[in-house]
Image (cartoon, rainbow, N blue to C red; front, top):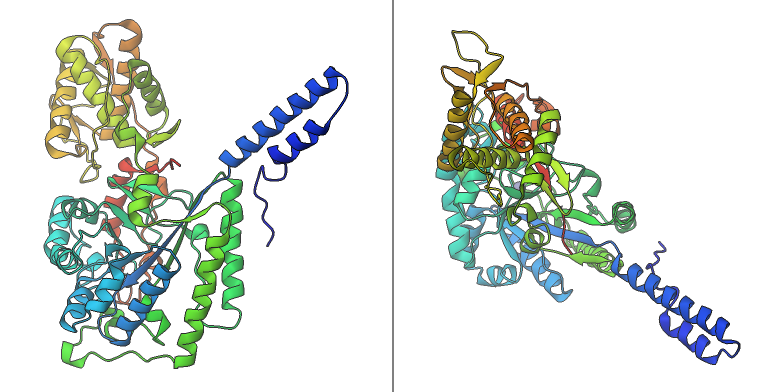
Length: 523
Ligand SMILES: [Zn+2]
């Protein structure tokens, strides 16, 4: 594959040599000097605009049954260290405990040279995460995830000496209630692959943290089955690489399980398929690959990583590095009145994330910004000089209209003002959007409230005073179009009971789409 590094064809040195030899009238000399300057400018600009390709390599380190997995894990960690590449190893709590009880300090030491992530407490033992959360709500689900999973994160932290930096679910056992619980465990990033939520196959923010998830076309994985594996893997990587370079850069996600180098079948498939729940004494070992196959897989992988590393613009990045590269610039920005008016205009048309210059705002960001600004105006009769985003989760349940009375088409200003102050207080104390906003004895949905608030705020900024009445508007919440529909196919993991699907989890997922926005990289 031929790749051209922009701006390298004309070097300032060769041009200046040619010009210094040039003799002739001053006009030509001036023209030549201008050409040099032009050449230098093009070259420098070209260098600066080589699109960065961030490659994040992560390993779900989870097989606590097959002892050969320990050696494969160590060999991979050491091989990558030798190649100068740091990966992210997401470790299952039980795997960490097993490494400790088997006395594998050597494996632990090799892993500690990389980023340490978390991959649930017991992974595939029943009930798995999506199964035990299938009927849970937002707050009770968050508490249940924490109750069941926090011990594993604590064990990983104790055994590896660091708080795990990222988390990803076992199989497709994803659930939105994990996000606030992970935050409570000190985990700052979601790193995995599944289809539940995502934006354009690139990193995004959701549930208050950076997600590298649903990367699909930018997910590269070389097979470990010898033969054409390496050639196909290079070509697959090349496709994502070329596409991302065309689009100005981005991230490629690559994942493996260390056990893939040594097993013929997954450790959990042989024991926990389709809801199976055998006693520990009855757990079976998975089959192992012939030594020659394992050696070929390691050799191919070494070549694959060297190939990727050699591509112009490529940088291998860990979860920690991704969090810095994709840091949310919206959180440190101050917004002025004109900014708020622009966000309000956009929210009246559509309630979704807004892409801006070097950052993005989620629907929840705008909800909080406009509510706080209006509450401040109500209190002091002037707009705040600067406004800041405060992170908020989405609502906890789907809006249901209140029973009794009539549906008003407008509200008295004093009644709406009271509702805004109450909403600001709710957001401050609950760190999430309310499920409904009360204007007197009548409730309105968070989307209708935001559209009504946005129209009122825009008018007030223009008029410089509050209105007598507030006209009720209808909000168009569309951010949830990035969330998958519930279906058995979405939950296709072999460990789930036959026919499993989780409509309630996906309903909560759509509510959390209020928090969704693309992540923007800063070089
Ligand atoms: Zn896993």
